[in-house]
Length: 98
Image (cartoon, rainbow, N blue to C red; front, side, top):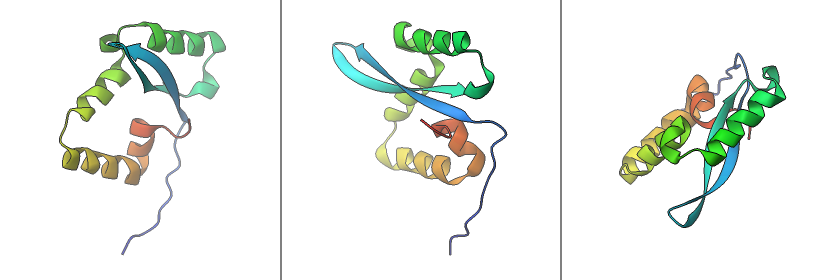
């Protein structure tokens, strides 16, 4: 029997969808922006521009996503299960809003 529980995050975590072209293919990759309500707009703009323009290997969030996509499907599903159902991990892996 599943037990419902709430977890209050100490700060919000935004996930911004970044459209890119990699190896001639269009793709959308998520960029995590922690505590966007506490950061100046110039810093948020710099983070998003870096994610849009830097090589994929230089953006930590993109590297993690690409590593996970190489795993076998059952293992990816297990990661999704853990990430979506444990309070703190949800924000760390998927953000609290997009």
